[in-house]
Image 1 (cartoon, rainbow, N blue to C red):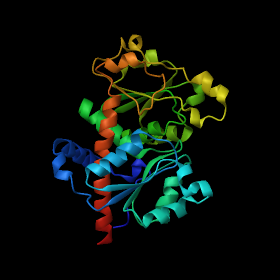
Image 2 (cartoon, rainbow, N blue to C red):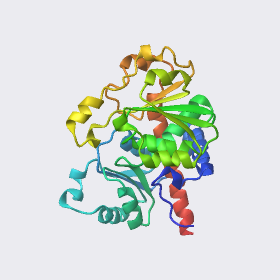
Image 3 (cartoon, one colour):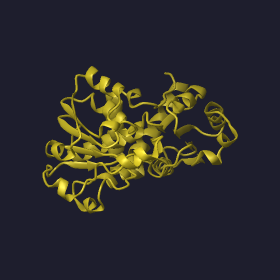
Image 4 (tube, rainbow, N blue to C red):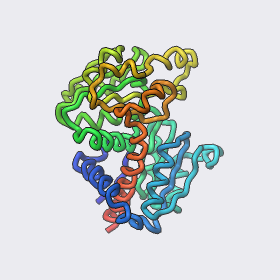
Length: 310
């Protein structure tokens, strides 16, 4: 068995994803059964880009599995500030750790690292490309809240052009039966062409609209995203687009009573704080779910590593 990395959610089969979700469920129910499964193992978190939830959830996950954590939280505190390449950094870290979780502002950086080392590499977000562990978090959240991953209408709202969480979740959800996608964005932040081609190739139902108010009554899941200032080259464009969609109580009046509101966070002002008390708001539950599914992923990938060595 060859070494396994997680760069894109498509690196996992649907059966493997289901297995990870089931394992995470069991970890929530029986946490004490997993306290020492990663004892004497080390996770290296290589974060070239700022992060709160993703980095700390990876670190918390490994600690709760009995393992240890090393790494850095910004490029300036690593030898990248001296010009060291991603592949060289990964090869150095391989001497110290058993598994790597890496976030980087450049698309494809995690794949470069994975190709340089013999330990598993998990993509914790690469530019505007993919974010597979957020996708696992989102799948885990949808299944826990709605009991299914099929027969759903999902609305993605906001920055669909640079939103790597949106790109990854679409890749995962097109595998499920009868999932319809409503793409809500200004013209400047529409879903990229290659993502639309993936929808077409999967014969998925999808529509584009600028109106959140028109789309919201038919949704089972509303996935809000922030307009990402760090992805813009023009400050004026960011300022013009950042307040395009703001979800508040008035916009929820016509939404289904069992619709769920998701957001990968951080939010800026695209969801009013008055929505936090709405029972349909699950974005802080997503944070907790992120730690639980990453526990399952770390344990599983280390197990695959051991099997590959046999």
